[in-house]
Figure (cartoon, rainbow, N blue to C red):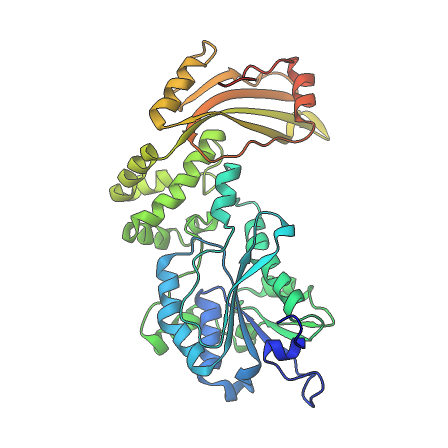
Length: 404
């Protein structure tokens, strides 16, 4: 494959042909309402927009843990249309946690039949190993598992070939489109046709309903932190319909909150609280049963909080150290924690505090506790963490150098 000319591999006009300079019409397909509406429109009426479908590539980044109902919509309605028109459809994912792991092409076909649900490395796996949930304060997860993946495929397979990059921003998303225009290059021409057409999200939903007779489901990871805002009602409905998917999100949140009580999925409120308020007993009961069947670990969690640059009384950056000390079943982990709590009582939230922050002291401050929860969080700390810990606390010896 690598010995063939790039244009032949792509199924595009050869560089020596008269139309070699025609840009590739590259469509980022997130499976959601807007990009699916755009695809439906051009696939059913390409000549109205002057689009040659043989020059279209549909590119989908697989993050993992997309809602099953969204995947079902895409497989039932859009894939047959793409296959009927012979449009090249590529599904790609991260190859691993490091950029050096590259990307994996999961499918590259003009007759696609299924949406891949995961690749070799998913956002869920990254969240489990780090003991965190995706953050509301930034879209780093989207950049890492979508933007970077798509960019790598484009560099690898398009090279210096010019392309029109279609992103399905609706007419309500002018600011996002303006930001995207900054990334225009000599080869990349950003296109936002829904905005040009004046299509709102409601217009897109109506177009999909007209074509397929369904209300298209929103695309998102089941543990997306943004799904607790404007789309909260829809999220709760989907979790009532699919308790298993609710449990996937609850498991990530539970571990993250045991390591840091402030790690609620939706920032100021937790998914568990929302499900309790919603009366979703099926998901909650399944979650508690599932917790007890998982392997558990006891973690030694330490944090140091540095002062803000302009105010020693205000918290600045924080560093965290997490070290697994014991792994077994849930009961064994709880027993190990009680036997190694250094005489401190275990608090109702399941932590044995070895050091609390001094509420009245200036920064830097430090805290430490043991906690038992689901296994999987990897040992991790910054290179200079121990030095800073010893400087701030005066503790030189590790209390748990030999967990055996």
